[in-house]
Image 1 (tube, rainbow, N blue to C red):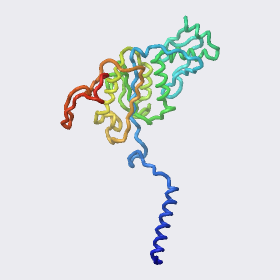
Image 2 (cartoon, one colour):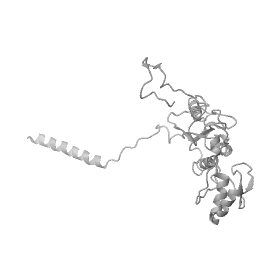
Image 3 (cartoon, rainbow, N blue to C red):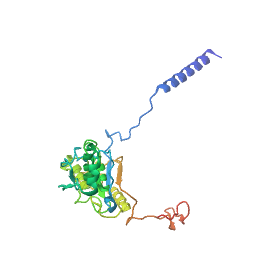
Image 4 (cartoon, one colour):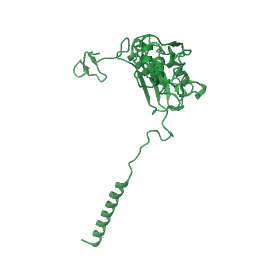
Length: 288
């Protein structure tokens, strides 16, 4: 082998070894999840849908040892103080709650508890004693400022039956998509949301499909009133295509009642490419 060839072989071998050594110490690449023009991800759109069907009035039993704290308001602090024991509220979420005395089985259950558990029982009666109240406590404990700072998300809301259940936006509920804040644009959006949650009733059915469809229809709108607008209802541009959207559905059961039904798996039809479709496995079924 010539000296030139041997020198070339050593050079190639040295470069290869250096490359392998460097690759062993190289950190994995981290790719940005947002466009380079954005300093941080845009606040996501979040839809909160609450079940206001009649079954949400079903009682939730008291569990000994649970704290059952008074739910927080928009600022993260308890919405009110409890009355002197052994009194409690008939509905702790009401704007002006009625103070009541325990009677019958509830009074007997209260008296049978150790003294250190009795305050929790009174809070349970006021704020957690049925499905609707327990749902409200969960929601109010999630969206206050101490957990979700102002502007971190954008929020819209609806019920599935009667409370803000006419689509987005509704003027009676002020439920159009907007930054979750009590200062953006002079709106008290977070407080409006909390006030709505506290007043959600439990009167009707469970048309979950229709509730999902209303969110989908709202997401398909365009223009300044679209949930994709920079400030919906106020400023359309700039719009960003990487804004994420989520729906949080709180419900105690499966759907019933009216709703959109675009089911086509059991129908003979012609597909967009001209192919004739006849119902067949694995698409056809008997549960639609």
